[in-house]
Length: 573
Ligand SMILES: Cc1cc2nc3c(=O)[nH]c(=O)nc-3n(C[C@H](O)[C@H](O)[C@H](O)COP(=O)(O)OP(=O)(O)OC[C@H]3O[C@@H](n4cnc5c(N)ncnc54)[C@H](O)[C@@H]3O)c2cc1C
Image (cartoon, rainbow, N blue to C red; front, side):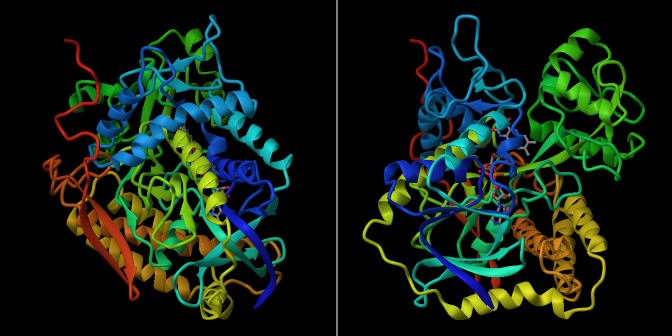
C-alpha cells in the first residue's frame, strides 16, 4: 500500500553529474518550479560521478577542435554512435566546463601560464582531458551538491525508485513509485516530467568498478515500461582492476590507465610480459584490446595466485612512480602490494555501459514526459566510450534535460497514475516476503560467474545461450528466495533482493543483444564472428519488452554528419 504521495513539477532520479546538472538548470530556467531530486543514496555521496579519477574531455585548446573531439568519439565508438548525440556532447562540453569553473566554483589543474591543464587519455588524438589531480569527480560533485543545497530544490534521500508509473491511458509518464529506505514504506511521487539518471552500472560482473548503489534499476524500469534500449551488448571493461582477494571490496576497483601510459608492463603468472604478442601498441593499446589479451592469457591458465595477472612498474624509476601515482601507490599498499617496487595483481573489470535508453538530443524518450541523461542513456558512445567522455556525457545531457524539462512542463497538468500498475509494482517488490528466507549470496555468486565467463570479454553463441538459460533459472530461483519480514526500515537484504532482480533482468538484455550481434566491434567480441563487418552497413541492436517477451531488432546507424572513410577534419592542402 502507498503510505504517502507527493506532487512535484519535475522529478529527477539520481544525483550524479546528470541528475544534479538537470536540477540546477531546471531551477535556473524557472525558479518557481517545484523540483525534486530522489536518490537511492545520500546526495553528493553516491553514484560514479564522484568516483571519476582521470577527468573530463573537452576541446578547449587553440590547436584542438570540436571536429577533432567528434571524430575521436566516432572512431573510438567504431562508427556506432548516434552522430547527433555525439555532436551535442562535444559542442556543449565546452559550455559545461566553463560553467563548472566560472559559475559553480570547480578548480581544475592549471598550466604555469594559467591555462587549464589537459592531459592525454587513450584513444584520443589530442591531450584534452581536464582534471583535478586524480580526484576530478569529487571536485565536480562537491561543487554541484553545494549549489543544489543552496537552492530551493527538494531532496528525497535514501529513496529507491522501483517503477515508472504511466497514466491510465498508457500515453505519458504520471510519476514514480518509491520505497523510502529509512522506513520501508511506499511513496508515490506524481510529476509532470521525470528524468531517469540512475547511472546504469555493470555491477552484475564478478569484477566491477561502479559504486554499490548502482544496480541498473533505471534500465530495468525503462525496460518494464516498454522503452527501447540500444547497444546493450556494449559493456566496457577496464584492464587494470585491483585483484586483492574475495575478502575485500577493493577487488575490482580501478588502477588508473596512466600506469600503462607511463610504461607499466603487464605480466602473466610466469612473470612474462605478454602484451607485445597481442598488439603492436602492447600495454598502450585501447581498453578493449588490452582486456581481451588479458582474458586470453588468463584462459590459458597463466595466472597470478588470485587468478589474475600482474602489473609491474619496478623497471621504472621508483621515486618517480611514487611521486606521479601517489594515490595508486597508497591504494595498493592498503591491500599489501608495493606498486613502485614489486608486482600488483590485476584483472579486467566491468566499468561502464555504453548501452541505455534510446533518446534524442533533447533528452526525450519514446514515453511522453520521460527524459533520460547520463549513463542510463544509450547511443552517445557506440561500441566504446573514450575515457573522459563519461562525465562529459552526464553533465552535458543532464543540463540539456534540465533546460528542456523546465520548458516542457509549462502549462501541463498532472496525469492520473494507473493504479493497477502501482499495485503490480508493489506486489512484485513484496515477493520476497512471502517466500522462505534464505541467503542471496549463492545467487549473486552465480550471476557474477555466468556474466564474467559467458557474457564478458570474449563471447560465443553456445556460451550466450547457456548464459540465457542460467539467467532464466536465476530469476526463477530469486522469486522463490525469501527475505525475513521483520523490520522494514533499512532492510538491506530486501534491497539486495531488489538489486539482484534489476541486475538479472538487465543481464538478460545484455546477453540477448550480444547473441543478436554477429560481428565484433569495440567492447563486443564474438570469437565465432571475429570480423567487424562492413562499417558502411553499421547497425545497432534495439532491445525492447513486448507482451512480456524480450525482443531484439537491428537498426541502421544514420551517418548524419560523416560517413566511414570521411573525416570532418580539414586536411592540409
Ligand atoms: C572508478 C570510476 C572512475 C571513472 N573515471 C572516469 C573518468 O576519469 N572520466 C570519465 O569521463 N568517466 C569516468 N567514469 C565514468 C563516470 O563516472 C560516469 O560516466 C558518470 O559519472 C555517470 O554519471 P551519471 O550521472 O549518469 O550517474 P552516477 O553519477 O553514477 O549517478 C547515479 C545516481 O543514481 C542513483 N540511483 C541508482 N539507482 C537508483 C534508484 N533505483 N532510485 C534512485 N536513485 C538511484 C545513485 O544513487 C546515484 O546517485 C568513472 C567511473 C568509475 C566507476
